[in-house]
Length: 369
Length: 129
Image (cartoon, rainbow over all chains, first blue to last red; front, side, top):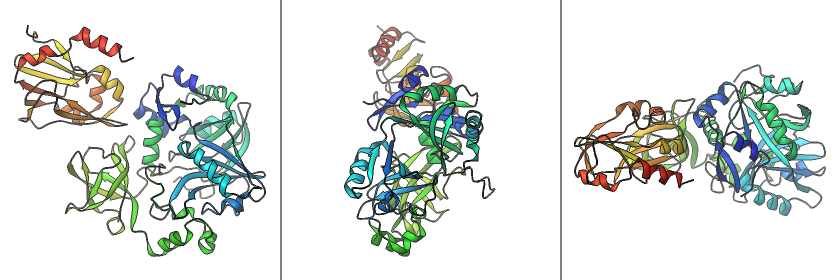
């Protein structure tokens, strides 16, 4: 079992460690999942996400080359800007979801922990030899998320608050050289901070001296991202789901729709035009019982419509929430259906995603949402 | 040898049971609630249901997962603690008091004698590391 550079810090803060993607990771600290979740929505939560894969693609043609493997417009990505994207299989299924940032001399990728070995092999095999695929194994990744994250970081890195959502900067935070992006996986404003492994503990300790900051484990990371309607790879998306069915068509750039040239383009563009046979939807159970992953979704005649792919209790919602796939004709918001939990059909309703409004920092629009 | 009224008995699945005459009060232990973490949902059986020792009596869900609560003894459900379905956090706050789950009319009080007493349960939990 591998450990992140913050292992000692986790233990010192009473973390409950669980195996996750080959790492010993904190599922929660002493405060517990509910308190950690609510703290992130109200102030600022500090997450260790060092298990995720950080990869540098080096080479002038990296952006164009990556377009052969993912449907994003990377050539049109301005320096220091980033996009959420998908590595696609030939059939149009999803091999991984990732963040792609334009950096000096290439691209910086953040991929899922459980997929990083496969992703690196895939990139090395499919990208032209002049594009170097460099795993940044000597770097930790911290996420500071929540409405107070920017204020906390601005005290330690003057000017960082000028970053807009989905932009990046090389910046010193409390004297440590970092690569920070204004992004995250909670639906809140926040930052992900890449820092040298040997400096991660010192940086985390400094961040924790801020009264607004509390450590938050993977348990709350999951409830936060579910409330934000964000997909978890291997659950809500995977090789058997397409970007269109997953509601991620927005990741396919306009030029890419016109030109194609990404894996599964024919099938995906056809699905985009004709509509997918099933779609990812948000679901609110009417009672209090959470419906977990795998629960059957049925209509009022008992006919199967699909399955829950993520489900649980939403601490900010104050009740159970779920995402799953249903046949497109049953996917309209407001549709009544039922979720089978422990053999009992329980009434539920399709609702728009996200469950909790996003509060990203988009100064250009001036809109808080 | 019979179990005196008011004494707590425990199962290896971390349920507790307290005899009160021919009634047994049932809940989950402090260790169980601490392992579960924040309890967000409790499903209790209908009063009148007959429970066999070891059968599923209730469901308790934390922020992370669902777990079953098994009947430590056989008997008819005579009362359920509706308060914990409305405020599941009571199970975390006071698992052996206000956070009780259900009461059954003991079918066979001798079943209690097969359960662990406090000292045995404490050393069982200590052995779990």
